[in-house]
Image (tube, rainbow, N blue to C red):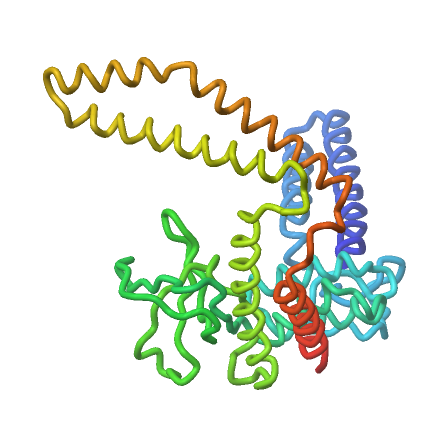
Length: 347
């Protein structure tokens, strides 16, 4: 449509410009006031026609660029959609048009636009996702993915928390001065009697109302976020453990202990210094001065021990035994994600 529209306008514009030039050239040739006035009126009429031209154009929707406007296309492009015919458009152009229609909340037109693109490339993931969003007509649901996600009222005041794995209906996304919030309700609250706000970053959001989602999908989504939280906690705990098979582990542990003790002592003295007065303050000041320079030695000892430890680990990656619980959780999460993908892809 766009290409045909531009070509049609270009031709009309060219004809109008030539007409205006001819009229003014003729006016220069004739000297009588009556003739000049008549020619000027004709020029003004031509300019007005050119200005009003877009409003008088016939509908070009669904007409390919290489056909005249009188020939109707049989490409199946539905009325109300934007974009060129399916045989000359790309999946990218259909996806762009669908996004625009979704922003305008023209859901049916967006679905039709996605269908046209999927006829060209049926496995286009972007178009499939856009079609799901358009079919859901802007409704969404989400699952809380962070433990004790904060809940806010209409004034922005924190009024509690919602546990991880909770399923929520998401009615609207709003930008706050410092965050992006989702306006949510629990699925049983169909009349928004107890609506609240949750940070978008605390949710995994999917298209469609929760009531239309299969119970299996809801259960899997809840289980997925719970497992991921447990996995992250397990990995964090394991990070602090050194590999006893590494010959540099004892040296590194000693360096870590010394480093922690040194900086803890410094922080303690600083706090005492801020509270002390008189001679006591001077004594603490002297202690802090005596510790100057030790930080360089402590940090160098730690960095050297860490470098030796990490270098040995890089050459012996199999010596660190894998945590069976971590492996089991990672395997289960992968299976859950595959199942969720299959359920979301099914009609």
